[in-house]
Amino acid sequence: MTQYVLDTNIVSYCLKGLFDLERKIGSVLDNGDKLILSPVTLYEILRGLYAVKANRRLALFTALSRHFEEKDIVRDDWIKAAELYAENLSHPMSESDLLQAAFCMRNRYTLVTHNTKHFQHLNNLTFEDWIE
Image (cartoon, rainbow, N blue to C red; front, side, top):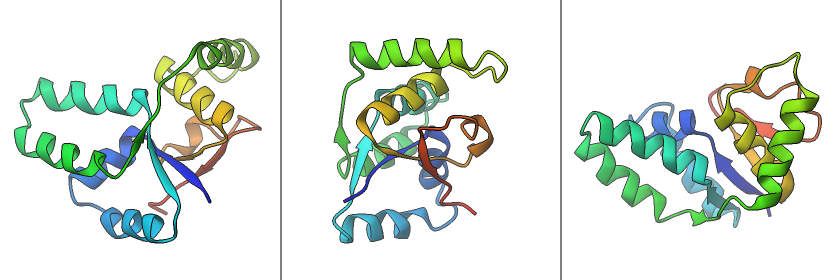
């Protein structure tokens, strides 16, 4: 069983109805795999939707998130993110990307992102791009 964490860009594309991601998500669930809602994605999606008062997309996100298991970021994730920051000074990453990567690495989740360049230098992170 694979446990997938959808990065913010993937959830955003899904809410916009792009790239047939609803079908892909359905296929993942039908296969018995799991979707994990990371606190990073939750925060980034909600702040964007609240900022522009996107009530329709907020309702879509609420419906979509019912298919996800919610997991929290714990102290070990913060420590791993700090280590990743120090180990990758030549590849600066945003705080949210560091936390997302650390969260996925520690839990052995597969990150689904279209921003593969942000993560490709991390050796122990499993990720997929469902857009390409």
